[in-house]
View 1 (cartoon, rainbow, N blue to C red):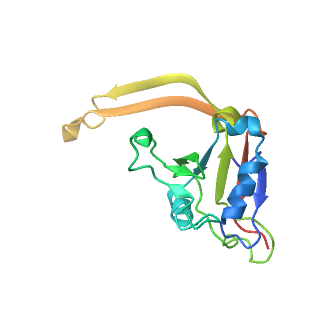
View 2 (tube, rainbow, N blue to C red; view 1 turned 90 degrees about the horizontal axis):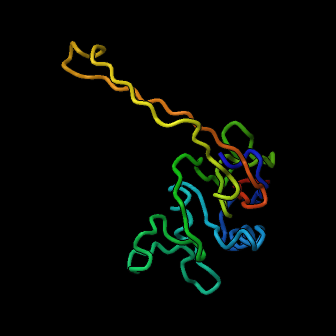
View 3 (cartoon, one colour; view 1 turned 90 degrees about the vertical axis):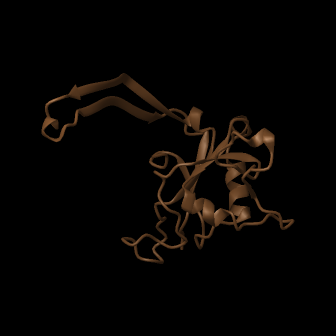
Length: 169
């Protein structure tokens, strides 16, 4: 979703490291770091949970024991909020299946960091319309419902966020 027009960094070797995440954070202009956060899927979070900082402390914190963070669903990574987006591709430390290893091509998995709301805008064109069809499933004693919504999205500010991809030979 985000990676089509954003600035992308690829990792040599593909493994997520503290240093790579630190570089990603500082690749975003400080103006956009005030409202910044990370976006990736749950499989990527599983990999990140094992990473320690330079003082052997976990860089991910779920906030489960802090009442101030009770509403934060994704936790914090290096002090920034995390949004889990299961629509994001899985992270891999190797090239994708359709790209041979050693070609230097990144996989589809990514970690987005920055002010996503400033960088990418979702526009709802019209409200949701619900259509009731009492006849389509009448033989089963059921009423059938359809919902229609029109939306689109566009990149608004490509300086507001950056992406980190997994594989580079």
